[in-house]
Image 1: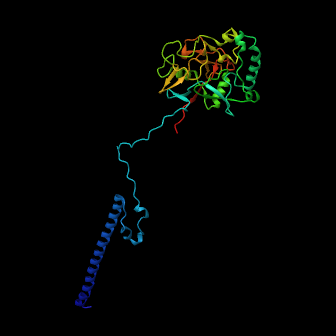
Image 2: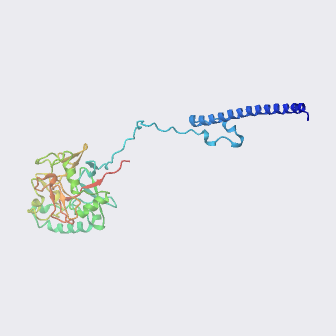
Image 3: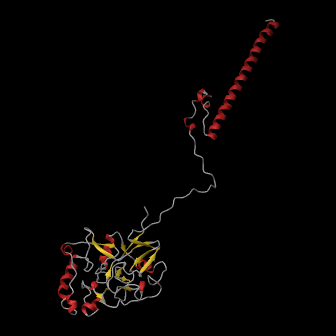
Length: 344
């Protein structure tokens, strides 16, 4: 081919290549711009929490936008921010018939009366809380009361033993009540059972003494030293001396806790001696010294506090450990403890 013809033929081809290159450059720029826009959209989604609606259309082959891209993430807590307010925590409490002691345990406010666990009938406070033992005591003293004491003592009738207590077996349940004669004639084993049937337990010696000494931690419910008449203890008369003319005789006699001296009863109703109260948290426990002795948790047999006619000035430290857990007489009573309960 002549040289001129070849030159003319090559010029259009070079021009076309330059045009194609320019077009390709423009296309690359557009694609890069779109790619940058897509990247900017992704950064915006991560930082601002909203997806770019156009980002999913950038690359047809890459598919649609991430379906989870529109969810708003919770902001992380600020480092060093003060904690929010806390809900108040309710302190463990005691049942309404008990008093909280040292924020550690509960104690019955009053010495117990006993009820039949199954039927709720009140057990006589003047007989052992057992069908067989009560019937035996009634039979014995219906005769012995006519043989001991002076004429006035012999005329004193036995208190009534309810018929149901002689006719069927029953188990005692301890109940703390104000203004009633508390249950005497109770063995340690029966006291333990009565507390257990009430969802409670006998106090340990340490618990009992802590409760008795009150918040001020003093030897007597009312103060540091003995004061005559403040508690119902060391009274002017002994019931066995009145009925039997001998303080050592006839301690199962059902009449003993009904004896009066100078017109006043020796055994008082629960809570009646207002000056004998062990104070705790604006509340008080009645008669931990005097009125009746109270069994504690000791299988060997221990009762504490002293009863109304016991000649003791030891107050909360008074303790008798000379009888086993099956012993009873007119002076042995019941008071229960319990663990603290979580507030509802």
